[in-house]
Image: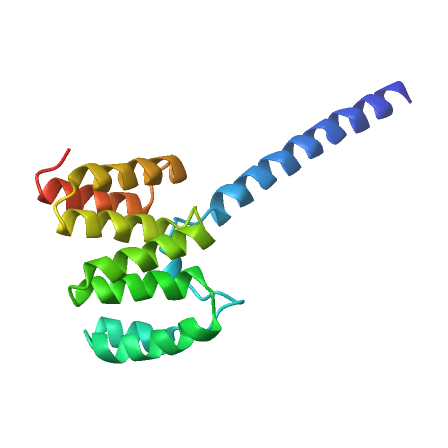
Length: 161
């Protein structure tokens, strides 16, 4: 009887260890790399598929028309970030800055907005502020992320630190 109880105790310990290891493995497998939020669907926000297609084809005027309409009805960081991006691509840096800041007011940890804002600062010659956005991304992505890599690369190309 004592041997049987010992056997069950050992099996129970092994079972708990196996479950713990399986849980860790599942966590590691399901941990996905960080992607820019503006490339993912937001269940609460508007469908931005059409806007993204217009931006991808460099139809910035069409994207702006659609985004402005969406912004009237949706206070979403995704919408404001894409407005900022599209305006930056058209050279309207001042208004672009406004929308990036608005996106970050709504969602301070929005990695894509930090990256794009850093790129805006680079385009306007403010490397110090670009580096500040890089520092924010380092805090948001301690293990690294696409946005951090992209902004770091953009700063390096411009001769920044």
